Length: 313
Image 1 (cartoon, rainbow, N blue to C red):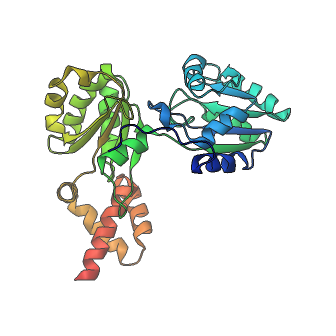
Image 2: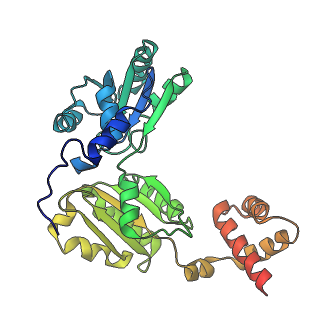
Image 3: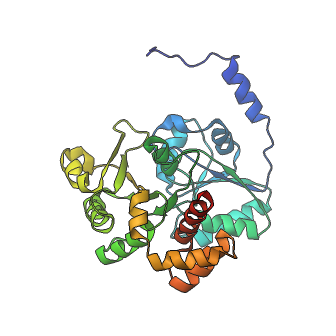
C-alpha cells in the first residue's frame, strides 16, 4: 500500500469536481444545515466546505470548536452562537439575516445539526418564516457505527436511534426496556463516565446473551468497534483502561428470532390469527395493539410471521 500519497495536482479530476460543485446552485436567503466531521478532519465534504465558504455567517453550537475546524480548512466566515441555551434568540437573528438575502450555515460541534444536537428549533423557525432550508449531509456517528457493526442488512435495514439514555438508574432502566423491546437494533450514545452503569443496566434489561456493539472514538486515531454479548461487556470494558475514554455509540442488537418466539403470548397469537382472517397484517396489528397494549411494530412483525406460516402450510 502506498503510504506517501500526495495531494492531487491542480487541473486534475479533483479540481474538475471542485469546479462542478462550485458551479452548482447556491441560493441566497437560505439556511444551509451542514454536517461536520465527528473526529477526522478529512471527513468534511467538498459541498460542505463550499457551503461554509459561501455563507455570510456560520451559526455554531460552540464557536471555539468550530473555529478550529474552519481554520484547518481555511474558512474565514464569521461565526455566531446558536446553542440550546440561546436557540430561540439565535433563530430570530438568523431569520432576520435571511430576510436581508444572506446565506446562513448551521453547524454543531460534530456531525449533523438538529439530530441529537441543537439546531432543530432553528430549522423549524426558518421553515415557518418561509425561507429555504438545504441540508448538506455528511459524517454521522450513528451511520458510522452501523456501517462498522454489520448489524443491519439490505434485506432488513431497520434500526432505531434512541439518543442518550437518562442519567438516573431507574429512569434509564425503564427507558432501556422500552427501546430494547423493539424488533430492530437500537443505536444510542453514552458518555464515558456513565458507560459502566449503562452496560450494567443493559445486562439487567436484555440478559447476558443479547449481542451488543460498542463503538468508541469513531473516525479518530484510537477508533475501536467491538461486538460482544451483554454478559461480556463489563469484562471487555475492564480489560483496557483506555476503553473508559472517548465518545461512545452503543448498538443493542435485535432479539434473535428464537427469543422473540419464546416471548410471544399464545393468547396474542390466537387474537392475531382471528384478526388475520378478515384484516390486513397492518390492521390486525393496529387492533391487537389497542386490545393488548403491546407495541404495534412488535405485533406487526408477529402477525406477518404468522401470516407467512399459514400461507406456507
